[in-house]
Length: 229
Image 1 (cartoon, rainbow, N blue to C red):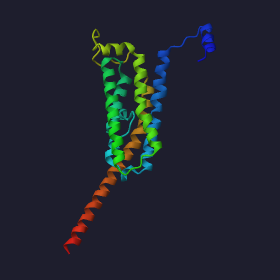
Image 2: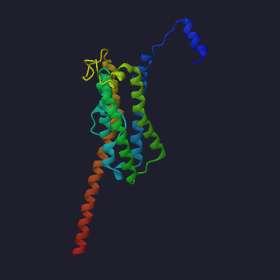
Image 3: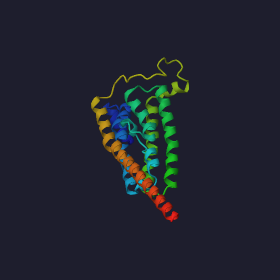
Image 4: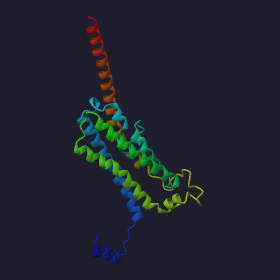
């Protein structure tokens, strides 16, 4: 915003609630936008035939976003999904901040493990996929930093160990609950853009693993039969 624009707003008496604007950005911008790189990651996995390379192991580690809200049983879904689900339902306090920070740290460690798993396999990880993953890694920190700015008093309380706050270490329902329509929309988007694609990927990986195992057993049986002649 230029100085002239700021002066014009000041002259007209218009005020901007930074907290409200930031909250709307998190709810209607960053969170829904998270699904785009998540879905793009699934496309990259499909193009590189993950079921025939890294297989079930990498599929269970991924994806890198909010997918835990939908309940799908992958590691990264839980690491980020659980803190996000709690934030949508409860007030931000030292307990919730601790869960969020812990989830972000574990998520980053798992991301490193994921990269190592992909590199050790025969799956090609293209520069485009790496760029998509960079979004998926950085978005949690962007969301968490904005949330901590909105709740600086709770950050200070966390640094003091929650001293002086009776509700510092328990979950407190939001004083202004999010609308059922919003929560239903987010759940539907997660199911459509995240849970279903990655569940399909996991099924492909499991089926391919079984086929490969049967093929290996058949090949071994044939080798033993040939050796016995």
